[in-house]
Image (cartoon, rainbow, N blue to C red; front, side, top):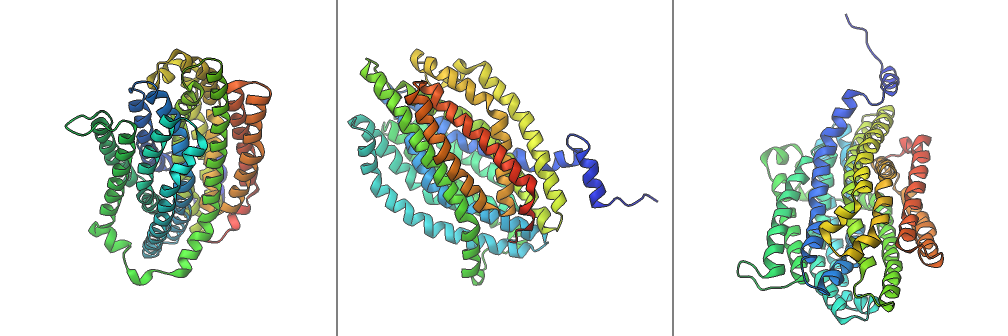
Length: 475
């Protein structure tokens, strides 16, 4: 007869090796589909950047430079409301750990309802305000026209984006991260085909240029939501989770979702605000370059491309974070806090190793990566040092983001909000201005501020998680 092994003994044994095989399998089972989904979803923005890069100047550089402003605004608003996913995933995973599957379905009903109502009102208000925003940002009529057309169409897809986040969080919390991957693949096929048709006027469609990219993204977003809804209508899901019982709409549950999710939404808005100001600092570099005889917004184009390339690492790290948040919350629901801690540190180890390799590629081949999106020699020249720096920060980004998501899974959202507020507005933004403009470090100086932020975020989140106060949070 085999001796019984206690949970504590198993935990000590797991810590004695790099990562246990069982933990690795479970983390990767959740993380790999989530990673593929994030990368596929990110392809919407990468496809836009690439297709716009095939246009003639000045639409090419103005359009690529505009994308950073457009996507920052989209994520500042859409990201705030999409934070409903944090509360949804945490609550669903806790209920799954407690073996209360029908209660997990009730969370989806309340979360999707809250997401739809709140995001629709915000999308309408922002759609009306977008022209004034671009008139504030630039005096260039071409830049303003491109920005307004593209951004307004992207906001047509904000409600679908936010409601999709609620559905994604439900499936992530139940441990089925592959569902969002399927939806993301369908969404990106639609976006790719529509971009080809609408931007250049192929297949009998009108040639819309940059505006066509916005139309394609909006339509694809609604198609992706439709795929997620179809999954919930399968007989097995309706029988086990019963997600559409209207009588379970609960003001109390809506308040709890808002309580957990709102700090994450505020943190997302702070992050996007920080990147918006970060982009404005880059625009100062472009203004100076144009005054000295330049003909295109090379610093803005280079920054957009770096962000798009970096987003591959960013969203891949988010995938490991999603897996970690689910495992942490399910373990806490099963009253196994030591298991929750073990899963988090195991995920960090795997993530750091994986994204050290990805970062090494960005360090080794920066010119080739930039040239994929824009073959301007000047864009490649100014962007290469910053691309290398961004790649070198890959391990830091991995550790910081995974630990952040682990704290989200535990419900420690208020602490994350305060840290993001302090680091973005108290560190990254002022340092970007100091390093890039005051000390004349240029684009590399601006990106050095982002690297400083990544280092501090990782250190703070590591100390918080190691402290263990998150283990006592009730959801």
